[in-house]
Length: 219
Ligand code: AP5
Ligand code: MG
Ligand code: ZN
Image (cartoon, rainbow, N blue to C red; front, side, top):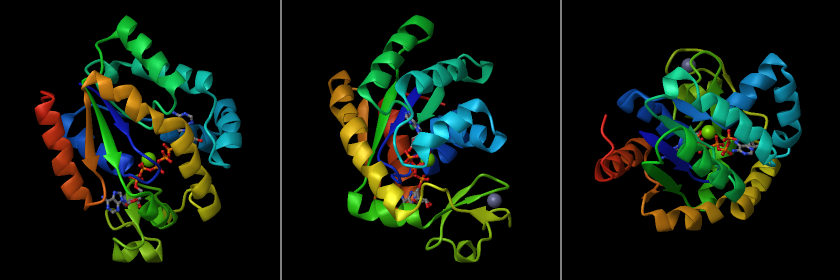
């Protein structure tokens, strides 16, 4: 089951990936999470990526591609994966196609989560992440979140460094210039499902499951 989650910053890729991992039992591979983990551990990769992430720009293609293709070679990805945040440029999409051709089967489905850009800024500036369970929440959707407490596990919440309004606006510009063209890239394959990401997370997940069913992707 080889899945790509496509969508602008704040579309809900991470939120849906959490649910998909549980329902379908394949790993989520989030390039943003990989970079943030490296940054936290102070690795050279993390320090290199930080230059771009703090500004909301893309990390260079060659660097991201190497990380993703190494990760795809790990045993837990042998029966499939959910790519969250990769590919994000035409170069990355082409590199992924040739990697999959050599190493495993083709993509089964590209889930394109479509959300009106107007609501994305509010979603991102209000997002909070849990230090303990890595859950994703929002100050307006969870009463405890506004007090900095995770509603799932009681852990401490934090805000991503790139979730300030200025960086968010740049991330949205970068999405439009570099990543949105992937919609046209994948459309001719007939393997892309565009779903409405502006409804509630549970309703979006119903649409994701329906798209998986019609693509013949089974558990
Ligand atoms: P990354 O971490 O991938 O960030 P992103 O693409 O900007 O996407 P987000 O994680 O911000 O949003 P999301 O779609 O996951 O939304 P979420 O579910 O959290 O990348 C960060 C940086 O790393 C990049 O800027 C770049 O520098 C670098 N990078 C990463 N990959 C790269 C690559 N391939 N190439 C080059 N550079 C790369 O939800 C957001 C909020 O909305 C949450 O508060 C959530 O609770 C809420 N929410 C979610 N769904 C709903 C809903 N249906 N209704 C209401 N609220 C909702
Ligand atoms: Mg995310
Ligand atoms: Zn938690």
